[in-house]
Image (tube, rainbow, N blue to C red; front, top):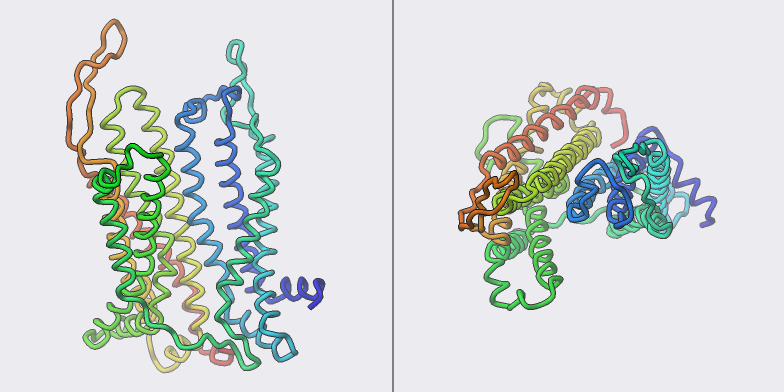
Length: 473
């Protein structure tokens, strides 16, 4: 297939295709800006600045700022992946028609992958331009004595190769992700065949979660057993990363298992039509729950870990405590934005699920099923598997924080002597569990999920119109 033909086929389509490309580009642009901001803070050297914010002026706090922007990228990239599912049935029919015209299976896979790459590339370029323009627009040098102070590090520009790597890396990753996601999809002239749906894993998620959460809970004992205290720091960091990744993967995969088990438990017992429809959907497609809530559960897991770390550090430090508190406030803000962005992905997934099943909904409404029953069924299908997942993610995060950073710290009592704050005594104190912060985190996450899912139900009325019975499946 010639390059011109490939590009034309990858960029043409209907209204839903245009919406998918636009949403993917917007998510990629936001992710690019976040990564470039993190790179800028990481590039600040000893000769740069000074800045009005201590978070930027104190080099020891740069790691927290960089972590904040990196954490924002996780839900943003997940949102990009969920946006790629907008209009998937119509795209599959278009690819099937190309197969009828003589295209090979590899050709249609390449078309879909190039479409995602072009959308992400346009977003990455837009994000790079926004970043470069923002450096000039937001540059506000102010004279303070003999120094020139700025509120943002607009005087720092990362190396050109680093900017190019980020701008080119996102589109490449999006292209590869689309190609991998379609590796088991066989597009035939008669439609799209995805084969027999595999049963959701039952034991593997529990094993991964047990290993990850259990390993982080006894992390101090593992470090002592392996004598990692006297070895390079990277070894302990690598061990923690592996355990954290195992727990996160176990949570995400486990949501599918929870949805399947919950659906099989409810289906023969419930008498409400909405719960019966929801339970049957959870049995038929349990992986949808894990795909829908993966970003939210990961954000809650990280947020609970950060809250545990906040209590530990603020209790063990008295000097410059406002610096640490400001850093954690910034991280909390980033995590709150991450949960909101993840909820936006949940909204996209809920709306796409309703639109893709519009013929089923239209048939049920035509047969006399009230729309409120269908709305409650869609709400239950989305939220029921995610509620235990969010609670378990918060529990895993706080357990990891207490296992890795300890449950007792040395607290320094201070006093003011000659207008100076000095240490008076040191004592060991227990680190409390931040129940209030965890309650706000879990409750707020569930509330955001409920609101966004309810907004997605606005598509139900148009999708369930009996006229939709005339549309293609």
